[in-house]
Each structure stands twice: as C-alpha cells, then as structure tokens.
Length: 255
Image (cartoon, rainbow, N blue to C red; front, top):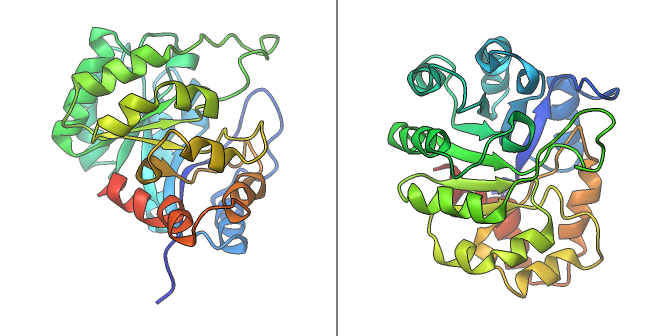
C-alpha cells in the first residue's frame, strides 16, 4: 500500500495584501495531487483578518472536511467568548485543530488568555498550531506584525502538557534555538513551511532536532509547495527519515 503523505501547513482563501492565484480548495487539491500529498491540515486565510474568525471558518469548514482534509480553525484568544466558542469549533465546525496567529493578532503566547485557550483545546482533543509568522515581519508597509518570542511559545506548550502543539512557519534557526524543548516535550512538533533560506536545511535541522518532531508543511498558497517539498526529496538523509517527515510524524501529531 502506498504511504500517505501529509501537508501540515496549507490554506485556502484570499490574502488582503497581495494577489493569491491559487486560493481555492480545487487549487490546493490539484497541487497536492501533483506532488503526491494525500491529506493534511488546512486553514482559512480569510478568517485571519475577520473581526470574528468563526464567521470565516464557518463558510469553509465543511468544504475542507468533505475534501478529506483535517480542518484548522482560526482562533484569537483575546476576543471575548473564545473559550466558549471552542466547543462549537469542535462539534459544529468539526475542527481537528486551532491555529493561533500571535504575530497578526498582537498578543503573547505566554498570556493567561492564550494558556487558557490552549488548555481548553487540549481538553476537547483539539491540537494547537502556533503560527509564528504569516509573512516576513520586515514587510511592514502592508501591515504591522509583532515578533513572536520563542520563549513564549515554549512556555505555552509547557503550561499545557496535555495539549499537542505544532510550531508552524518557524525559521530553522529559531527551531534549532529551542531544540532542547522540542526534543524533550512530548507535546511539541514543528513544520518546515519556512525552512526556505539556506541550503541543506533538513540536514542542518536534524543535527539538533529529533527526526520524530519534524513535519512537512508547504505554506501553500502563500509559499510555493514544490520549494518546500524539494527540501525533503533531495535531503541527504535516510528514506526512513523522509517517511517520518512526510507521513508518520503528522499522524502522531494529529491522532
């Protein structure tokens, strides 16, 4: 039987700051099929900037699930009623995970609100994806992102040991800087959606990070899927490690 390969970081929808040419679910499915991806975790770009993210997610959650993907709902812990809304995110939207956007929504992951949301998510069986960035933080002429402290996302995961976390859109240097926490905490994984600024990036990451903690993520359609995929395909590592990155690590995280 052919292995199932997963993409832990992909999206559908529009982006308010530049034209997205492949933002439909059919575009995502076609891109995945072309590159041998059979499933994964999909979020909605539109809802990141909705005053009430639930409204944006409500429009696409069933569509994403009906196409065979796991759905990641957008959550802002600083909005009133978020804790109570998690129940509907699980039962009505059928989400497998929630995505936090501290860089866009302007809060610390070490805040009481973020910790409370992450703990409740874990109680409901929802995984928590911490999106370290959506765009390069230096692109300030479009919108202002706040930096995300690595110490804060580690503190969040340690404060919620019963919740599974994926640190998404993290640079390889940032990931290597918190490698001890990633390796030691049973509830932390990272995706490679921003491992795009040095050669031999998978090999370098594996020097410090346990291979069981690394999951493929493309960042599509904000980023080019093939770019991230080639990092794995041409990595000079054992095929069993590539299989973990593309398949079994995601299954461990999402289960």
